[in-house]
Image (cartoon, helix red, strand yellow):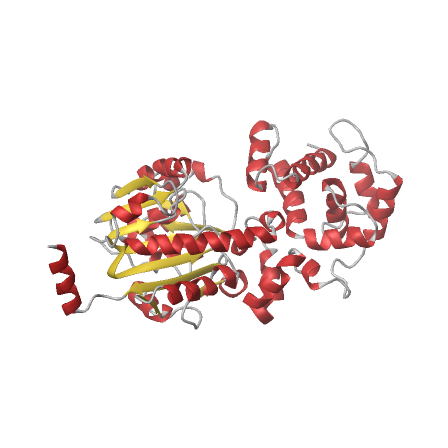
Length: 448
């Protein structure tokens, strides 16, 4: 493909992403499936153009506004080329000449736009904080409340491409053998610093071609997500529920922690998501998993299994603000009402899931969000409404489950890209108070 053809492909995909038809990753992957003639260099260039715009859209749109240009896929990409990829106006003009498969020729306004941006400082002093940090203005007070003085640093880290994190499946191998297996295939992983079963790779990989992946010896999972699952401290022989299991990433991690001994239930309201988990479970050799589709968070299944589980893991639906390194388009799809609706849903899910926790058992609440409304405030609200639960200090849980000390102080765990080189993750571990001996005897007598 010519440079112009790559630009034309990127413009079309940016317009499709802007129309919110699907997440960027899905649209880009579908494009490459349908255009197999695009070689590795073509794919890399098209992806660089698209994700450059998505990661820096706040700055790009500010510049377009300053120059009186309407933001769309084409103008955003012209700005990306001029400001960040350092194409000179002549090169942009040659690539956009209207020839076959290439973008139509620049009009007079676009030529002026490209000329004005050539050599400009991408982040001038007068650029507002939300544009400089590439996030929607309405989110500014929420991010400031959660991140404080670290806001600019964390948003800058979100502009960087995330590495590929893998979780070693200890049902089939250990980290040393997994490293050796990957190195034999030309992959050079490093050990993750927080997760004892994590590996990190700094290049893109065709995972389906790796024997270690096909054999179920490694799974894709961000280190922060691995840590969240490990903090459940699920042990062999326990009864455990993954209440919002989705496609099963944390279910697999829980099954490995339990060494395939006990009873693990993967619940979700989306049958299709659970069905997609089937192949992953089979490949990983996770044989203790029962899949249960719920009609809603208040499904009767929960009532029938009340107080029956040692661990209930809630990876709650959230804004995903912690995953912007991997999903930069997601930030631009968020609306204020999304946060309100998700916070209400999280509270409902927690209130329902807690019914499954037996006395002395634990409820583990996790999100991939940076926002206090979805994290600390949810836990405070929950504890106020449920006096029979108590928050366990994360340092205590970390020592029990992982050994050593957590990477940050606080009763609950926050991980972030700038500080920990993980996605943004939040974890709180809450324990249901065990019944006093006399209360347990009374309860047993009442039920006999």
